[in-house]
Length: 455
Image (cartoon, rainbow, N blue to C red; front, top):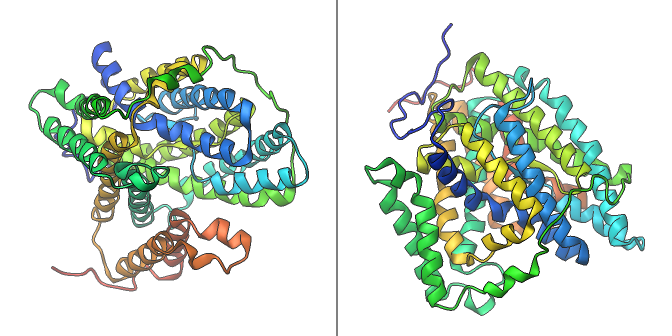
């Protein structure tokens, strides 16, 4: 039986999965992926370090977040044996683990632990936890009633919609903007970036289309300089060189602190399945059949192994990045060979943290203008997956309940505050709640429960 590809007509694709763009085109596309992901790669580390008071360890932790993301991206794109999806899929530090990692860190800190003790516990828990995802990867392709277009479409849509809040916060000035949140200059810069991206995305010149995101960010960055919003002195705060040191802080373990982290690894496997499915859709690759299932299995396996590598090299769990699917959508470059350039750039940035620091100079409204578009396109990719099959009465209710619950905890985050702490950590995140709801309803409601809805 031939593999079905509901997204075969991808006229926007300039370079397909196995095409080899010129070095110039590859570097240009890779640079845009870096711009889209660098803040996401370092931000979890900044949040964890600031909350737990990791102080002088921060420069090294930031450097390793970039170094490991580069190594992990290469493994994911290259596909080494059974490990990796072989898609243009960028790996970076996962936001999903923030809550459980902070909980573990505060528990150790409450016992009088030093920053080194905190990090040893976190990395020990994450190293053991990655085994959960590694084992699950071997069965995920057999979970036919769980890994369905309906479930993955819901998860991807919610991922995109939940990320929009973060993107739009930056659009308005950033979480730390205070009274300047929503200031006219912030809105102007965000809209300028959106306008420039849209303008160049519809260019008939392929190289200009590829550069659309970069041109949007560059235009916003240049204009922001005239508004005095760029602090070049921040470049001197990063060390010039960092050498990776495996197990620098040692390892520790606590079963009570491990259970929430283990569960998040389960959720991450589902998120990765959704991200890779979206990647396949956007890239014009199959979303059914042996090739697709092999990519999902290899991608989830790489996710687990890469998170293990992250723990060994003293950074936090890695996962596939959703926003890079948006970059593929916007640029039309789906070649996995671009992933090698992305990996190389990230590794170099890991050795030279000052380079990564340069990306942090971009003002939040400028980044927000780009990420609002990128995150919105992720939600659109999820909707396209949902629309790839007839939406019958059964799927209507699966989607309605899953979206309702997932977006509900996003809009009313205090709704879970009376629940036990473990319930809050697990179910107060929209991706987790909507994903689990979709899985449970898919298993409970019979497949023949409703007829296709007619126009």
